[in-house]
Image (cartoon, rainbow, N blue to C red; front, top):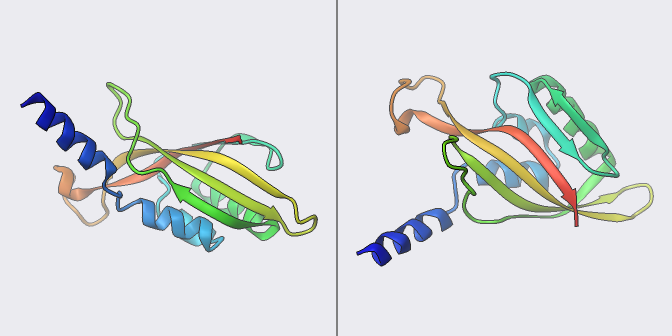
Length: 148
């Protein structure tokens, strides 16, 4: 019975999350507008990205939009792959979504591969009741990255 429960949990974690599609679209289309639809509006969002982006700050929703608008205007995505499932942390809501993001500097042509981490937490969906899982969506509350 335990093996069946573990197998079911693994299968459920491998199912693509609804939030992965807009995140993938945002990066593949270089669209800060699409990215803004999955960002949390409940406070500042820590963003930490390595060179050549060199960013480590707590940003408002509007600032994250403007920063990614600038990033997407200078660098064009060459690939973006989401690792299926969330890595959860005991006692904390939500989980970490991992992705590989490669982008090319339009001026130099140099390509930079990064591993990007999105910390997602459930938030009430606008226009839905505040109770229960049916009225919640996953939103990005933190973005981090490291060079590969």
